[in-house]
Length: 331
Image (cartoon, rainbow, N blue to C red; front, top):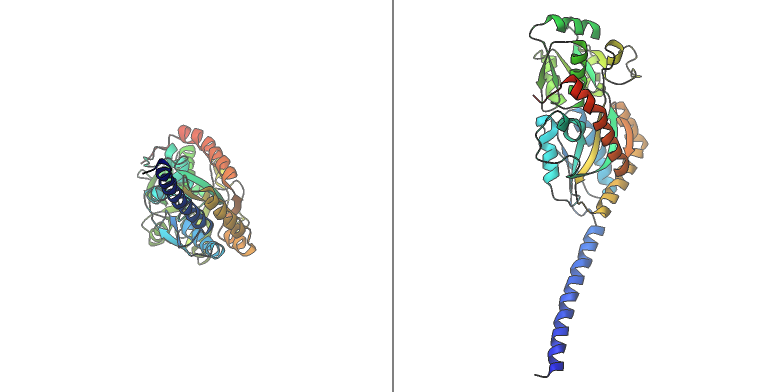
């Protein structure tokens, strides 16, 4: 066979291979450009019915409309939101699994010694900070404590400790009460739940003496006279509850708000992140959604990846000395 003929065959084969590779590359680009082309899953690391679940469902429908595909909620509660967040970190980095991130799983949980199978800041791209919200300390209406000051005094006299529920160790509500307990010298018995929904059921049923939850979660029960609000964790009193003091009014230095964001596995393609951010930004700026979030007690923030990361590092800096000085440790 002539050398020229052999070269032609080699060149021909190379051309075929190169063409095939180019075709695959173009298909990948088209697939990326077409994102999304199937339903998207949003992991909510809390039980159904809690504040996180409410926020996720408020956003998911409008987000799905913007993306042109349905956004399906998957509740995976437990472990103070660690279990669901771990599932989100392990998901393929393709934009089809989002995680509702929060402080317990990303910032404060690791600070109190939570054993994590994922790296909160390295295994996720934290792409959108939805907003922040205060927690409210509530008791049944028949509880002997009529205000936070009486609650503190009663707890000091209770050798076993007043039982109280939260969404789990490391959650914002947990930290706010634990800090209150340390600063005020209270006797409290923590009962962790898979979410604030189950804790609310037990509080109304009398199985626990108090709980931390969002004002929105407690609103209906306060309105019908089943629950009484003792204090809020925010720096200032809430407009809807002007007679309910802040924790720091009674115990200086107490309090602390919670937050929710949207995170995806690290190495998710930037065009996918950009598309998600653009649609989330549209959702958070929708007047109806903002009103619904505010009605649920959420202050909309709408920070993108850079702002969200700055926020996370600020949270770590804020809570590190608090946790150390209060000697809060994983239970």
